[in-house]
Length: 311
Image (cartoon, rainbow, N blue to C red; front, side, top):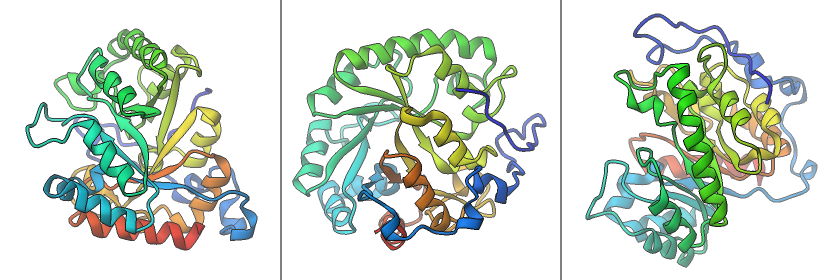
């Protein structure tokens, strides 16, 4: 993968991830695809049905209260896939359902099992990989590179520490392959900001071959970093096996995750973007909103947009 162009960023000390990156929104959205000129695609231009799913973080509070009841409502909205975390990100929890039980509930409600997420602080990941294989998952996803969450400043690291982690990444990718699983890395905005002159995503893609390392592209975090989502999808090509669909509204809240909103509720112009996305890749998209006030309402709004634009 060649280098990716980042937009102008405010990189002052202490502001790297708290300040919104000032990107040229029109050119980022276009991504070299003349999007504004062509407008939205019509249903007849597409040759395949679009599968879309839901990432569990969108409805995590509802799932914690009533997993089966929430899945039932999600399936009724038209979602065909659902991904979930294999274990609690905060450590073992007595209230967390076992992966096999989560998978059973999802399948019992007529949905397919989407990518399952590995614990982000587990160096070997063996237990998670075994669990994923046992429940018949196809894709496992690492949500962040450990060097970004190991230092004194969250989401910051240096080139030496990042490169020292790459052999561990290659090892877990191989361990996943041996279990019949596809290993994918999920990008955030910091994966697309220069680290010692190169982008972390470039370093990963070069260090680990395509047959071992795939990618789950988060369109919103890509945009947030000042990289055109369509450009990134094109550059990664067949290595893209999954996507997260959310939007960015920099006026919301104070933290970065507060800026993540339902597709169509922010600045990315999802009605125009999505038809180009589904022509660019066959990978399924998953609605993901990091911290919605009402998870089921966010899921419903996302599903309605997708069905309106792509159905």
